[in-house]
Image (cartoon, rainbow, N blue to C red; front, side):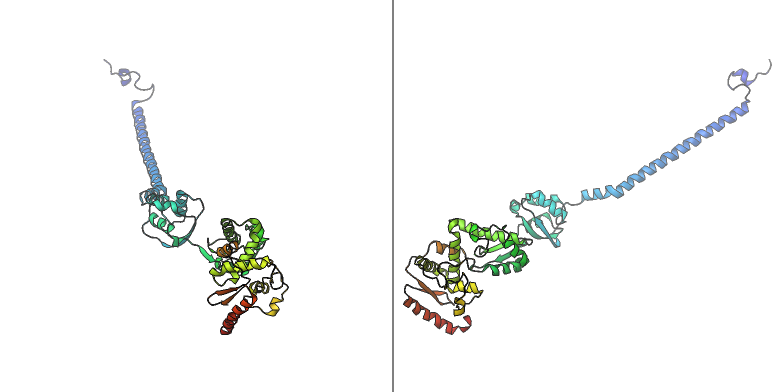
Length: 382
């Protein structure tokens, strides 16, 4: 039997005309190419994993790590805080509103810190609007405690004594409240401070004497409005009719200036009524002093000759307007004067306020001698 070729044994094993050795080499090359592709794929996969892993790590470092740290940190500071910061709580602010303000200014670490403290303290609902001196980085409980402490609330307190003239009241208000005198003057005539019709647009007599508390950023208009409003509240409580208010305030301003002591206000008010009733001049040094801009307890003949409509030595009836800002006691005295026939009075001892009353001029002269003796003993007081 003749020798047979491999192609004859396995017909179709190789393409026609291609020697077996060449075909075996081609197969080896193909296997090598497959291995290279597998290696390249593995490298690509590893590089991809590296890139993705790096991105994840970068994201962690740049964003996730701080976030995770914040979430794992305590939500509240400890202690009473440090430094000083001024925080204003507006009208109508809720607990959450306050928490937002405090967290924004780093008074408390988080809103939750303050809200948690507020939930544990029933007094939290009594936090008042206003300006407070707080500290940075306080615990929620410490911040709440300061908001409930009246001493932490920043206010400016100004007291207007009874009988103070408007000019002097405005000067004091400007100094204490750190306001410009020009702004106060402008506000007093602006028509926006609530002056009653009886004031005729003039502040004198209607800037009610009292102690007032204001926010540090109070305006001239706000301050005067509050003082005028206080007076209107007193007039209403005393049931003073609007048609009588001006005369009542004028009389009360005189009583406030003339009575050396509160206990004499009622009798002084009666002397005014008795004189007005018979159209007798009031002849009061206090009204002349107002006309001349002085504060002396006596007046000179030249003072008493002043043509001012406030000169009650010259004109019959009440002066042109109030001569000071009277308090509630003087208003009450005018509304309910002490019964009596007196037409004269004199403060015989200005040091103690002792005042004596008379129904006749002769009785008045006798009382006046006591006053003259006091003046000689106190020459600097004229």
